[in-house]
Image (tube, rainbow, N blue to C red; front, side, top):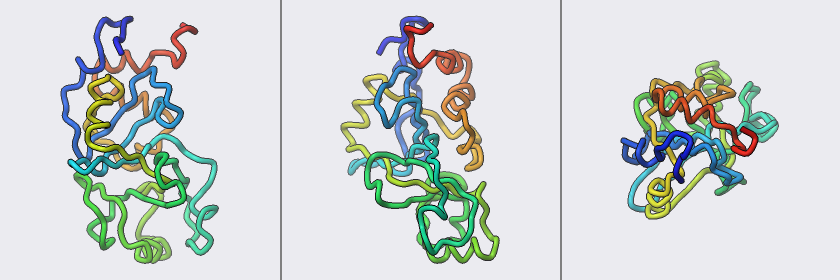
Length: 197
């Protein structure tokens, strides 16, 4: 969509290609109930499709509310997306220790040996600021995600020195845009409902 108040479009601003380890930031007026004002971390992007997790949709439950035999751990659960909402997923920074972890970018991983993760929690070798848990994930086929980008639905960003702890901040959508520079920062101030402006 054309961002008429600023006389430029999201596609004019997008300078990065889709790839694993990038953030998808929803354009300001996206109305999709899952993705409105969302920030998605792409953990896979290939011809077979793309997979990622919405970082800024916390649920009012913890990991201990979700899994009965999990060690006591002060970690909130996030809605990762509309696919497989009966399954638990996680991103973390301990991929050099947790076997079977999938590397995303830099010191960021997803998945891994779940029993080993529980042992690390018991032994205080991993902490809530180093891991995020999700129910469900976000998935697209290759053509779908590329069409959404062409149709101005997503702003593509590098991680811009974000850490797992940064992902858990309350105003991540706004912060992610502001880190991208002045034009993006202006987008971050758009009201959710333009008619209220």
